[in-house]
Amino acid sequence: MSAENSEYDVVVIGAGPGGYPAAIRAAQRGAKVALVEKEKVGGTCLNWGCIPTKALLASAELIDKAKDAEAFGLKIEGVQPDWPAIMARKNKITETLTGGVKQLLKANGITLIQGTASITPDKNVSVEADGGEQLLNAGKIIIATGSDPAELPTFDFSEPSVMTSTDGLALETVPESLIIVGSGVIGCEFATVFSAMGTSITMLELMDRILPTEDSRVSKQMRSVLRKRGIDIRTKTTVEKVLEYGPDGIKVELSTGDTLEADKLLISIGRKLNSSGLGLEEAGVELDARGTIAVNEKMETCVDGIFAIGDVTGGILLAHTATAEGLVAAENATGGNRSIDEKIVPACIFTTPEIGSVGLNTDKAADQGIDVNISRFQFGGLGKALAMGEDMGFVQLVLDRESDRILGAQIMGPHASDLIHEIAIAMKLGATSADIAETIHAHPSLAEAILEAAEAAHGQAIHAAPAKKK
Ligand code: FAD
Image 1 (cartoon, protein in one colour):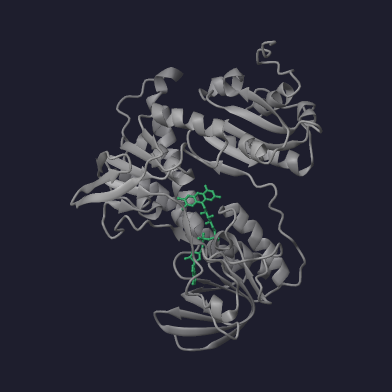
Image 2 (tube, helix red, strand yellow):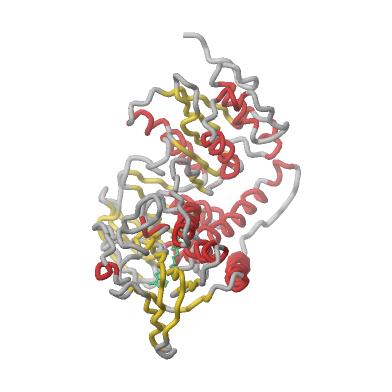
């Protein structure tokens, strides 16, 4: 690539679920847009995150179902995962989606540039690629560079036995044994995948419970689900040191003094934000010690004309928040005036069963001293859940005691990631549990569990025994 100058109204850096929708929205609004990506269009979400994990989880769920076939009156013998085929399916889904995004970019007239971008001191964008450097004259810049897996200094990541989530999604064979360090969303999703594949798993968590940021009831029930899958969960435990990197595995000493050996060790302790090497300090963009780019509710950084969105701005590291922020930034970069509203953000964990949550949970309400009424309904009391053979879990509503308004909800159970949106919309509209209770829900449906939880708030759930009088 020879050094050449190109003029764009908007240059977006990073083509993940924040950057590519931002580019499309800016183009829809008539801007001349360039989108720069150093690796793969679709970013973490489509290539190393949301979608590949969900593809593997779909295979894992089918294996579990097939093993349970007799309960449905079916005889299926010899259920065996075919890992190369499972990975090929995952790769095909990823390729289909990233190919689709490329077509959308083309159809919207967006110039996709492959290379590593940085911001020049005069607030334009320089792109380095194999062929040389290209300068993009940028009216507005949207930084959407996302995040990478965080690493721990205890481990040598060049050793094949040590994996990030990205490595875990590229494994050529199923490990016989796996240590998972960190029991957050990613740790629990990987545990669900590999336990279905027959891997023997030990999960280590520094805090006193798994999924430590979730509602304590959710975290307790997920612990029992994972234990039933044969996963050895050790809380208040971490790796003290690595004793040996062998040719086929790793041996570690734990903070408890125990030693553990496994074929692979997965680190799932969080994300490192991608803000270094972008020339941000020189351009005057404010960063904190963790590398988080500071933005206001319009997704503007402190430098006029430079916006930032998605994981690199910290806060809620989810694909849908990245997208929502991308659309706000794109509109503001093209003459609009929008603010992001992240008060109501559903967050989902795609374990079996799934977990969906939104707003306040019981622990946060207690921490904030908010007087809440908690109402629950168990999927075990629901006809549809029983018919599906998925009666584990519950719907829990967190209600303002005085006004009955819904402040939050946690759903653990079948299709929780879809069901949670009924509550999100109810919250957006300022609804009460009485509003939900008075809305007729179809029968038989999983959504009836939400209706029953809302009825339970008034002591009137039909399919739950009344609480015993004290
Ligand atoms: P990213 O998706 O990280 O994209 C940033 C892009 O910028 C990358 O393609 C990168 O190559 C590019 N880039 C970086 N620096 C430069 C540069 N200098 N020049 C050019 N390009 C650059 N979220 C959910 O909502 N649901 C899920 O189910 C879910 N599952 C996940 C599972 C896993 C295993 C992981 C790791 C994450 C998961 N996430 C999930 C989180 C989600 O993937 C991220 O929150 C989301 O991808 C962030 O989007 P982004 O656009 O901010 O950044």
